[in-house]
Length: 112
Length: 111
Image 1 (tube, rainbow over the protein chains, first blue to last red):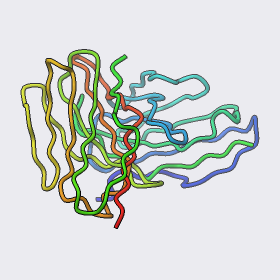
Image 2: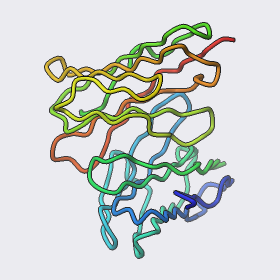
Image 3: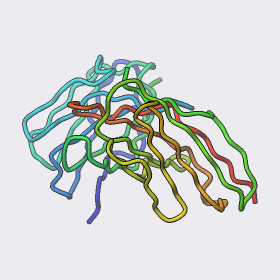
Image 4: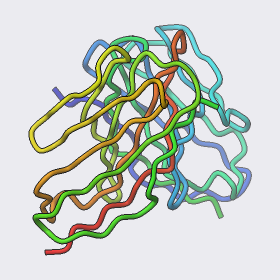
């Protein structure tokens, strides 16, 4: 099992560009999450999904969109990147509500 | 906010010593989880303690939970250099869909 994988590992964008981060899990988990982590800080939840076809807002959803068309994939989109979105993005999944979360290795995004 | 708050923010100890960090939260929970993050990596789950449990062990890790004080502690015994990492607590709010992570405790274990 690969667990949770994230693509890409690192990306540099210019302000205003768009991109999509891909998260994939092979554990048949219902719940998936996108977090961002800024230097020296904890994780802040951007969006999450409680099952295929569902999405919900977290603490810091502005400037991001998500889709969960397939159970194993959770996509995070930035329509018009801003320097404030420079961060490390982590995806996670869990079997159910409040259960152990399994994290991907992260995507480092730099917006110039 | 349901956010767990860890204390201290940073901790430096010698190899072989014990490390203790605390977590406080604000509302009723179903469970509380502890995670470790090595520099530049994703978080790794350590222990989940449910609201009806008071203590849990996993190897050199011991977690306690006091729901009356809304607090938890993580003890790492006989620390090793490989324990150098950031440690996060994440309370799971009763009836909630998500965890909320605190800012973490950065632990440095010196050889």
